[in-house]
Image (cartoon, rainbow, N blue to C red; front, side, top):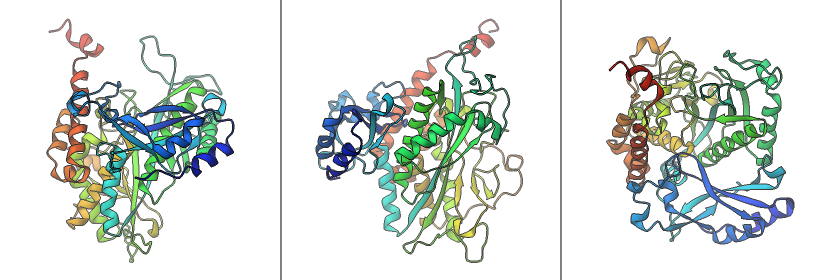
Length: 458
């Protein structure tokens, strides 16, 4: 990856004379932004020479601790790699420092300019090369659910829904698709849209989701999967930053409340051929699409069990997989059916696509997209056939089979030759070591529930 022309940096600084510093951001395995903050006078140098970060940035767990088992820490000398800017991602961050802050996404490379194997963005790039070789271009859209929570915890120190900015009352009901609740949070949502326009993020719709304080914001479809995931990473940071300005916290935890709906990341995918035709759109208007759509679905269903550790990357992720809360529990598919894991949405035939509904909101967007596209490629290459499409309530017809065990999910991923080949064996070693070390730490914690249930009874 050669240096970018400094013209982009120079032009940005000329157009934004008030910008004082720039955050150089890279997404770690958990999707957490890491990086450096530089003064404006160093921006052109960052474009010309890149900036150094240790490879161990991809060995960090959710607490920022280096997991030595990945092989990226002290055992390898904890050496640096070069990070280079991603074109088109240099934008102001209007919610920070009174508009005097900007941000720039980076990606990590080796000293010979080869992609660094453990960078999630480079993992996605690797998978996309398969589609380029086949003359296909994915068109994708990302839907992101999240909760707003009160910055003050309740009397037990637990998270609670926020108080409405309009009424001052704390939300207690679901109010799915409520326009009045969108009105109550209008200032917050409008600032999100304003900041997104400033950053060039292609926002589509916002809606009130199932639970108190839960919302969904969707990105418009994009024919560059890398750019789509860049937008998802930046939108998550934007939402969290704007929420703090309005006195809330925004969380992308998969399951912040045990008895309420979890938050997911839904991904819509279609494929264009070299002539720009949607290869999923059937000439006879079949709502279940073409043979290639069915092959793609078959690949997604076949690799779904082995993909769970990527769709549900942490302890909290697996609490989302409970019956009755619109979370897929088995590899199923169907037309215009929200009870299945892979849904074929209704709508114009030329927009025929797949909606994947399994992953949590806490997923790394690059790794999610890489996994889904690897599964689609697997289905296409093997001309796989899916089982019959489900009509009616899939929960009543198909027994749960997707694991809700973090330990088992990691074992299933480790055993998948297809995903190891697609994502890279070296990457998979780093990911598995990182997640297993975090699980070991989580298992050392004893919860309040365990004391309440077992301390006096056993």
